[in-house]
Image 1 (cartoon, rainbow, N blue to C red):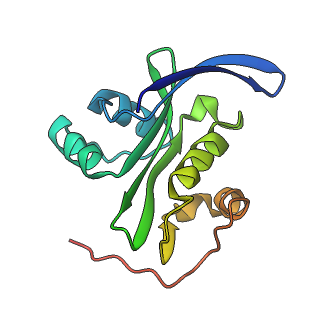
Image 2 (spheres, one colour):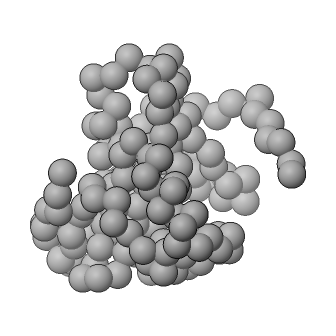
Length: 148
């Protein structure tokens, strides 16, 4: 566990980024990241603390103190779900999404899950389907959700 620093060559320019697997993200950081891509469900500090604490793995990328990408895993030993895979709108197309997916998949590497799943926003399917296909995910249209 810890924080790792690296420089990434992203499309012919360097960015100094910091990656972390700590769960110490703040509600402001997460909400700002989510809002940048139009995910406008705002959650408070207590709810985010509960969500992060119940996550098996949280991977984040920072540009200085700015959260620019994240993804997390919830699993029970049999099934695994990827949640909140998001890259700040100003940082998209620079390989950060690939870094997130590579790290989430690395966490699952030696585990014997019966399934690994994720949700994708229907508004962005033209982009997301090819992106997630690169990592071995396939589209299934059998999902349902309980509305409250």
